[in-house]
Length: 336
Image (tube, rainbow, N blue to C red; front, top):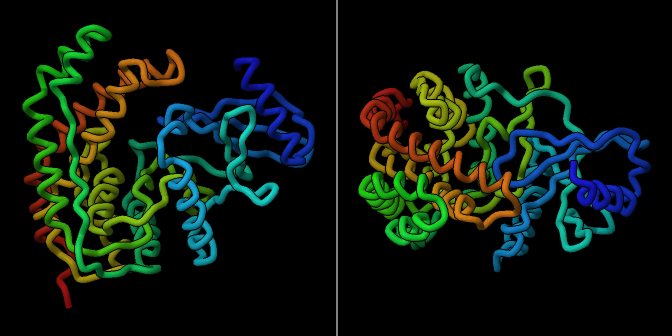
């Protein structure tokens, strides 16, 4: 580990009065945006999240984190199984030398292997999402449509000077990416006008399993959102869309768990499947990282890898949409 970050972590632990670090700080793998460390001190074991420096430069980022922290408190008081950030000196987010951190108690358990997720786990995850959506849903008079505007031609031109491999891939797939973004915007415009508390980032890497009991981690993306959009995206992730091994039985199990906890009687999921192309926005973020908007070379390489992975994933979604639509139209419980 870099000496600089190790010294910052020592200062953080000292400020939080968590005792002296008693063992080597261990990087924790799995995160695609921020960095996580396991820190053992005289008072216990903690997970420390080092927030991505580039993200922390965004104009509204602190307001977004503050909103997520407030929702985190609501979920905790509603008995949703979460691992909340700890509070020190009245704040969850800690700043050391211009860098930002969250500290968590170390949660026992393991993250599920993406290739070995059971239908029962899908049901449980869907049920947690449903319980969150059921806390305070509300109909709204007008749905503000979040339109995606990505200039792929501009990214191709930029990439030609900085990363020819990415440039050729983006140029080859430009027509598909434009079409996918169009389908995303069309679906978003067709969503029912409902708003609720949600966690769009509740994919398998953000659930810890301790003896079969799920605990939700990585809560900085908590926000208000559309339940229809979020349940579709997460049901697909839990059922194998990320690994290219979609299991429709797992997708339906996720929906079964979800609808047991929260059912607003909407059943037109097959008509708004374009929301599955939300991946175009993750793709843009990783194109930016691949072109140098990142903290270091390791993050740039991660961006390059995710560009390729995300385009492959979107093409797989395109191929599977007819099967997904048929299952959603025929296998969900009928409305009362």
